[in-house]
Image 1 (tube, one colour):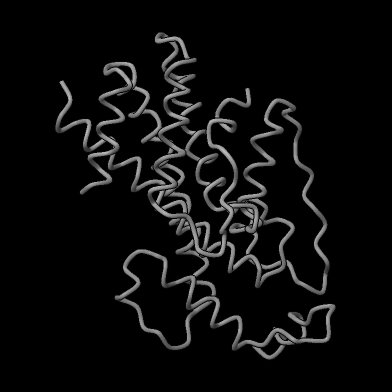
Image 2 (cartoon, chains in turn blue, cyan):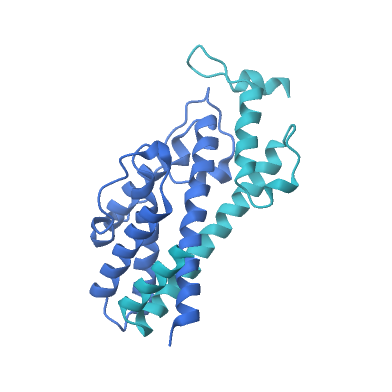
Length: 147
Length: 92
């Protein structure tokens, strides 16, 4: 279902500035509302998975299409229904094949040259930790003030 | 170490130097936790890559765990209090 993606809105028009925390929160909140509205109350695991996809989707949309990792995340989310095993893209041998483990952790990492991979990884980590902070903040606030 | 220079040569005319790689590795190390504890001179590529992989794995686990907890919260509260919680966390 594309609902998690459509709730996140249009990709960030200023990818070079990096995602603002507010934009990230806004997108994530919208996606969260949609998940809440459209998931039956009984299916807790399904809702958890949808929230996780909403987290990655809002992260990727906030980062914009200027980043290899965000494009890879959005591709993966849009093709989720196909469930096809992704064949590893053949790397140019002159670029080298270093950091295999890292390539598997960073979305789109398999096809990048080493320098791009290092840059993309730094950006991915920044956005990922921002998303984690956001989600942790929501959980913390709910726990202190919740019923 | 000198063999790395020839292996890292790209198709284009510009050669990726060890300096550039080291610069990128330093920037990468800067976004890892406890970055202020580490020295800023020549970094060990293997160590930085190892720490990076471990950190990304732990972040993925956190997203997974927090998604489950948010799922519980949505089940127990209505969406309005979750929205209020988000706004509160932003205003902090």
